[in-house]
Length: 336
Image (cartoon, rainbow, N blue to C red; front, side, top):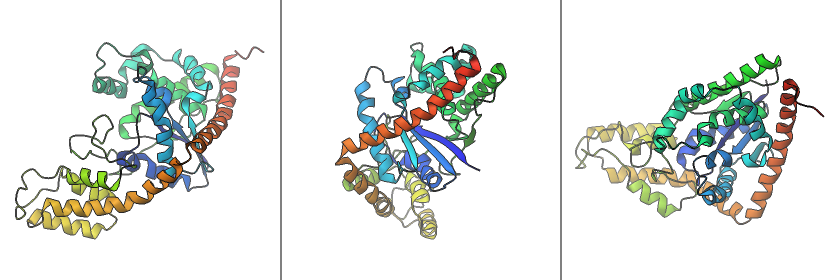
């Protein structure tokens, strides 16, 4: 069965290992399946909901995110990569959907509530940010996505999209909009903890390893990683749980037997933090070197990257225009 998949990222900086583990690897697997039609959106309008006063941050990040996509292996011949703001049908769909959603329902959305608290908006919530679940519904339904890969924390957002699609079809007596299914990341491949061990890897927390980081930057960040604060001497038994180095080894080292040996040795005592950090550094350098080198090659011709984004956006707009025409016909506002 053919799947239409929509996914994407907010362009607020370069992508890091958390993105790689949480979404990029899965996109590559989906891209390899000829039965999948994948749309990857650079969500600049969504990024502007809380960065409207610093638009240059978003503008500059669009190309950086595109470079990261190409570097990991997303192929514009098989995956439609586009920029959200270049699809004028999306805000029009958002306007129609807003009339189907109450303020109370938006206030109940747990994802929005937690993000408002996280960003410290208090009473100064930008209206665009508050309404972005509806904008997200427009993004998804415009391409008639059957599946949307998101983290568990985004489940309420997708459920609101399903509600909007269901209500629209019921009210207007149509089957125009598709209710998408959720695709959750594999167990253990959700949100990656930051190098400081204090929370998820995040641009805002400055605790990430980026796909574009140099060898020296990677090594410096690995050597600063949080381990077991009670593992003071090499001979002391160490704790694996909450130890960021072993969290990363579980995710990135394909030699699981080696990782288990290191864990057993560390728990027993006699294995120092410096040694396991050096080993993790080798693992990450091997994984990131080809990505970084491909990225550097693509970055030599940024005009070509922009042309790729323009072509993808034009392709995406044609699809969105068809959906909008169907929506207006269902609503009876296709007057001419």
